[in-house]
Amino acid sequence: MAKTNDENGYADNKAAAELLPPDVQNHFDRLNRSLHALWKLGRNVILVWAPYETGIEVLVLPNYAIAALASRGNAKPLERGTTTLDRRAQQEQSFIDTVISGPKQVDRTELQRIAGKLDFEPQNIDLPFSPGVEIDLHLIDSLLRRYSLSYVEDRAVALFDIVNFSLYSPLEQVTELNSLAYSVNSAHSKLLQRKIDINFARSTTGDGFYIWNRDRSIQANVNLYHFMHLVLADNAIARTKAVQQNSVPLLRTCFDIGGHYEFYQSEGLSPTVYSYIVGEVTIELARMIDKVIPGQIMVGDFLVDMPDPDTAGTRELSSIEFIEKTQQSLSNLQGLVLSDDEINSIQCYLTGQRNTDGGFGIKRYLLHDKHGLTRHIYNAKVNIYRQQADPIYLGVQDKEMQTFESDHTGETVSPAAE
Image (tube, rainbow, N blue to C red):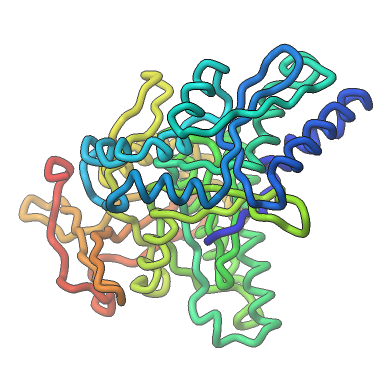
């Protein structure tokens, strides 16, 4: 389970609320107190809500009821690696899954339909203001999510893991975590310089960080991949300049796209303003990282529908197609300054052996974990070329993977095979 500590989610909206006029702030606090009473110290979850002229209508379910509904609807969990049609069919087995993965704000007709389907009565919260007039509906929705549960199917997550972290002294551990945190902040600043706004969330794993983009789209996931290699670049430069041994971490990194649940646990007697995530994508990353060798970048084998703003629909992308998509936007990073020198060009690719025609294939590896489960992965490389400085090579080459723990040496695949 991962807990976010970013400053971009509800915290931003809370800060925005505190800048509202005092009477509007009082309305916001009044709504929060009403939701807190329904929440009952974490016993209940607010599934969906709908505004009306003088208040909001909410559908509240106990946690145990959600678990019972989910187990009744799903004979088995979603399987990784299934086709999009199969995944949709599996999800449709459970109505509660579709509600959790849908929007929190619905109209009153839809709320009544959901309530009837689940056999729970909705509740009204009368308010001394009109939702959407004195307080923006988006701000209300953001507050409601603290008391709710969500499922996201198509989010990219990167996992940065510090090699040999447990062998360092506590002070060295703190220093290395701070160094990694600085690289994360530095990468974010560089993207903002190019007007690439990544709404990232960061969570600690103890010996590293999960990082993901709260925004949902193909481009949001692509931006996270670029964000990941800028973090690694900053870290690589810092390692070359480090005077004190063990002050800058050696990293191993995994990147994957998949689903997870997002919720807010109680902290004291109130829900936190930072969300927790747990689900397929974080579980996959945690199991992948056990096999990653120092310095390696590993990409999961995914096939996921992602929101596509260009078509106002969704587009299914495999791992290979996604990396091709990231290559198309690399020019956006040209001119960024790394260690006082501008980036001239960047290459990012999945590795493989040279073909007879001089080109390179893409090799997919099969891993077994300690639970007896298998998964396919790819080895990734990023090469950053600067104008007046040596190139920065991130990841390991295919020929350097003799120590990589795989069940076989890998199979060469192509985009058509995906």
